[in-house]
Image 1: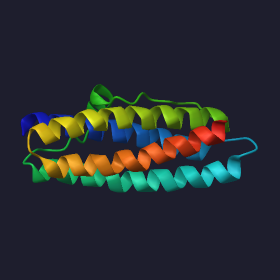
Image 2: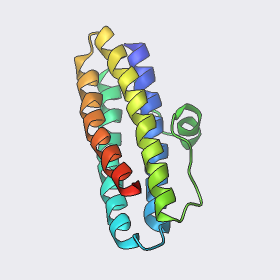
Image 3: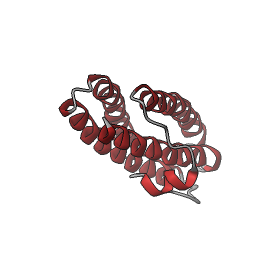
Image 4: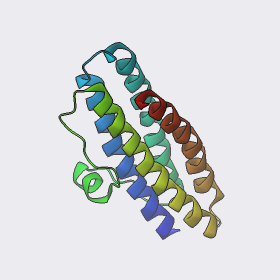
Length: 144
């Protein structure tokens, strides 16, 4: 189970960096789509808080210890920091990039978890993948 716990901790790191990015988009977005994007970003970071907690609890369930330091999040995250972003379209472009990184990471984790007969972890991330694929489609539709 150690390889799955390691990948879950890496995913937890990615979620934290993505969460911070989305909070930044929420706070700093400007432009003609401010009102719609400000609300959407808040919906997303609120959902991310719950997902972060579920991933950490899954790590604990498997006997691991969730990472909990920003230095570790920065070290293991597949999502890059996206700071000083103000334009709504740039925020959404960063959002799509972050979601795509999470989806890719979760697909690899689902495969590893299934190989380890850890259906719980595979199911958890598979649910997130489905939700995030829909978000990518919707935000790409916004971008045109």
